[in-house]
Image (tube, rainbow, N blue to C red; front, side, top):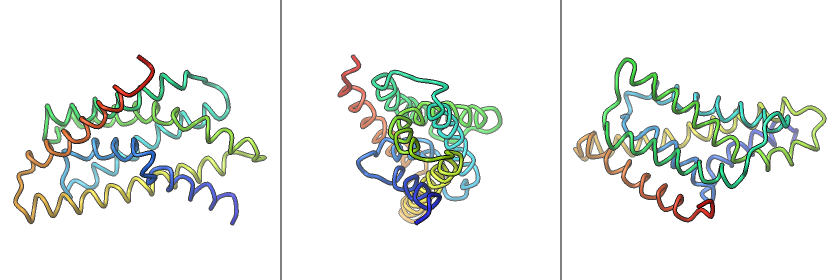
Length: 193
């Protein structure tokens, strides 16, 4: 297996790893207000998150930035809680400027999430002659993994909202409350306090 395939697979595994479910929770929090016909908006949101994630992964890998790992580990569930709380307060996607704010949140919170994985990835990339190709492969794998999560979520949403006749607002509130509760528990478990 060549380097590109190895890092691509690592990116997919990183996002789909149930032990590192914080990324899955964040993607669910981003998607909570959307239904299947909104798939383009979700794809843009997830890609904005990947761009932010990629940027800080690259900066940390090149040692341009260094941050307190405990702080980042605390901020990751904070970003999940904020994103799900916004969906609780506003359980329908906003139009116009509201959508733009969601993209900015996804990009900014992606920056934080990228820092959470940077130390491990830096240790892996330290053995590579050039890190651009593996870094690109990892982030493309991450994007594919997120698309898998979004697809699964949209299928479940389709079943719940369109077939089972659960209202869109109720479904958003259920998903957002679930994600918010887990994020809150993660924050309380942190030793950062």
